[in-house]
Length: 239
Length: 124
Image (cartoon, rainbow over all chains, first blue to last red):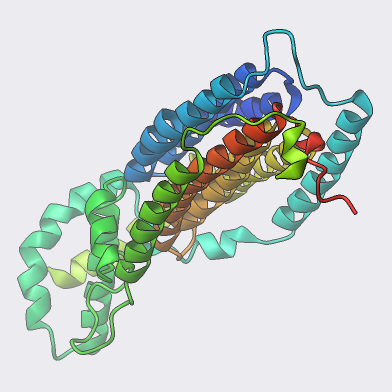
């Protein structure tokens, strides 16, 4: 119940902030509404049990990117009276095309039966209280499971229930899981695989590529934005 | 002891499923939020004449995609892959904002305005 209420509040804030960003003409107000929208998206991440991602969203987006954009607004302000406005006809045209695009997206979302997909997630088949209640029990009898190796059906069933409990107990604590996923270890998916079966490839190579990419991009941005002698608009054509 | 535990489990699964189903938001609601963010970003990119406004539209589009990624990682067997992808998207969005801001500053230095409609040098 409380989850639905929080979702409604933050969904309305995120969508309303986004609509206000698209509708406002003043750049500083747009930045303010962008903060509202991005902060609400971070809250939605927390509701989705992605705690690390929500924190990263708050730190990088709301704390970093928006500040960068506000600096851009400050450095490119032509004057207190100059406002670059969209003409009303363009605004209405954009809104109409946007509504059409939204209807296409909503039609495709509605046309898929997500319930089948959702029911295949093992960790959601147990409620939290039940999982907590039998977690201690399960820890006691995990040695008993090992002794039942002669019965394959019982063993696979025991393995499945352990996977459910492990995934369930990790819900909302994603920092360690994300770190293990970078190495290719996926406790939420392949807990008790046969030894010698291949693991997931992991994300170390994309992580390295992204880190080098970030370094190159920041050096390039510093080079592009370095202080220069300002040229007059008339001379620009000759350059 | 094992047998009783396992036979209990099937009953627990049924009860737990209904409990989850009753007070949960569901995937479609999150996809709707993502779609609204995406469309607002696209409209923002298409109609704003201020280059910084266009950048904000890009940020909104990337955020709409991120909401979808994280919702899929919670509600489907995708698992943590969605969250890792969303993390990469956040990092790349920060890099994109830095470069695009440098380009906007250069544009302002050359044109003395930030209006993107004024950059018409390459018109044929």
